[in-house]
Image (cartoon, rainbow, N blue to C red; front, side, top):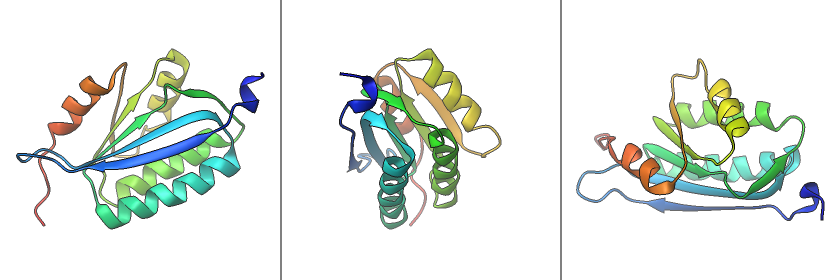
Length: 135
């Protein structure tokens, strides 16, 4: 099966900080991601970010098989919107140096802390270093 034929999915869960840690929205992408799919999924994720206002966002990109033309621009727009609704840090869990480099380039000039990690535990520790904003 060609990588572009792999079924795509996006799942998200909100993890509330315990003991003063950061609230984190976890998003897991998988399969082949095209512009239409990403646009639809980003809208749902951004709606959730507006409602629940976590400080951090963890995106697991390890199961992504590939992405189509136009998705990097849309991803950058999504990061900018996440910043505007209050997300201060984004942790990407990636196993590809190409995705890692592309993500860091996309996040330039967004006033958003973005780091790439090989595993979720390390990413969550970095995100948990955020203090919760006063309600």
